[in-house]
Amino acid sequence: MSITMRTHTTTIKLIIFSFAILLLSSCALKAIPSEYTSVKDGFENVGLDKLGNGKVLIYNGADILHKMDNTARLNIWINNNSFGQLKANEYAIIDLREGHYNFKVQHLDMVNIRSDHKVEIDSKTKVIKIKPTITSNKLEILNELPQNFNNFSYSKKI
Image (cartoon, rainbow, N blue to C red):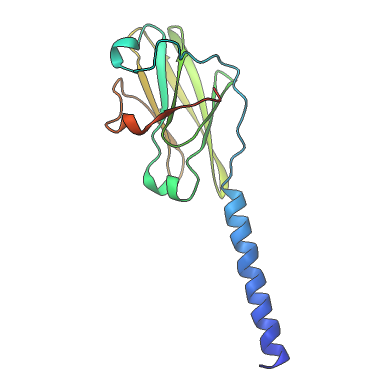
């Protein structure tokens, strides 16, 4: 093999290695500390009957594509206060009084993807699903637990 051929091979390997490092590190969203106190006591067996009247379950409903490439982590702020980070299939339960809230959601997928969502919480609000999408983030008030909720875990960082 000639010197020129070795140089090209080495250069190509270096480019591929650099791209792989960039790709892996770009998808790691730093967690933010929570300014909220979670409500876990009495919720060992989460059910819709225990939610509502201010007790709201928020979960990350990321799909398989975001789980595979590690872009499912969501940093969430509620009324400019840090709620914390939810990983795929994680949930937290918090107290939210009735009223209007602004949810800011961020996930990292090569670039920071941010979105704002206006939410009205009332006594009937029980479950909020937040998930990353290819171009933004989606927030839905569902008031039902996901079908595979037994695969979810409580976020210990919130």
